[in-house]
Image 1 (cartoon, rainbow, N blue to C red):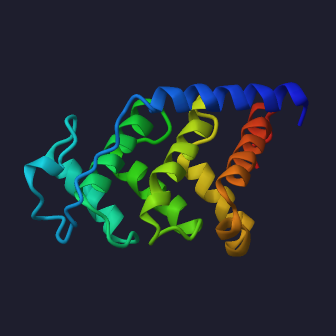
Image 2: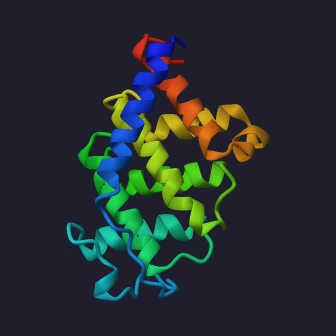
Length: 173
């Protein structure tokens, strides 16, 4: 990878982080116990209760101890992933985000969920959709469980930057 490419991706990641920092994460600590009986307050403003329940069910498959605040954050992320072409629909966006977290071994580390989702989104956004959430999960799966679970955020960003460069150069393997 050329120096100018690394610098360009670092700048892109920084700009995206600044854009995402405008949205405050939800802080509702109420635990989610049943996805079919959610309060109205658990619904993101652009989602129906059905969309909310779909995202909740995807989270419940893997993530341990999530709250209404986490659910709202995941709905917000799913909306952004779909809106920016990083996923095809809310259900697949939620499933892909949960899968990325699972592959990184973070299913029970609530404080690491949103940073992981943000990094995945930045890679998609920086690549203009060349690298999707599904592609990121595929890369982590190919890396193997030891490597995928051993990546800290900086190395995860580096891995995704390399994937973006490969895609831009036409390598889709």
